Length: 252
Image (cartoon, rainbow, N blue to C red):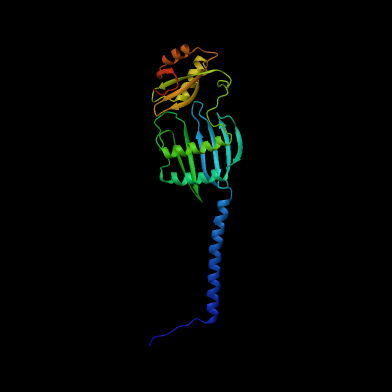
């Protein structure tokens, strides 16, 4: 014979309140997560590393609420700690960039083939999970692009994050630029530091050109003659080529 069971009214009431408590617990968990995303938690951190040259060393900590905590450590114009606030549009763009780059897919480090090259680490966060990626110029382009984007946000808020040397050429001095191709294994920062120490020419690295170890180098034209600097550079053991940096012009 088939048996039938029924719940007494008191048990039904207990089950009803049990259901309400479970719903409340879920709601509380959701509200806890919502609170966490609005607190001062890190979204992503950029830290550059020192080298034997004038590599800028600093830290940018981007928080979930749009605050960015800055620490200038070495060879940057502003030494010490301070902070700035991203605009709403900048914070939205940062989150989109992080989602597109998907840094979680990469290994934690990349081999370095250039001795003492400029390095950096990027740490990303997702709740309590975090991942740090370390490397130098050999890192994949999305990682290098993310570093440039983060540094660009700092520059947009008045932080000069290029290499800064107190002995640099004064801004009001006349400058002449040269193109210098170094041997592939030579670190440009170390090279310019060493040549300045010996020759007292106070050369300045302006920017790297292309994938090869080619650099735009400037000098104070009020103190040194162009031909003298070119002769010095062409005779250096680590220099493959040196020439005047002429602006490219379109042909007819």
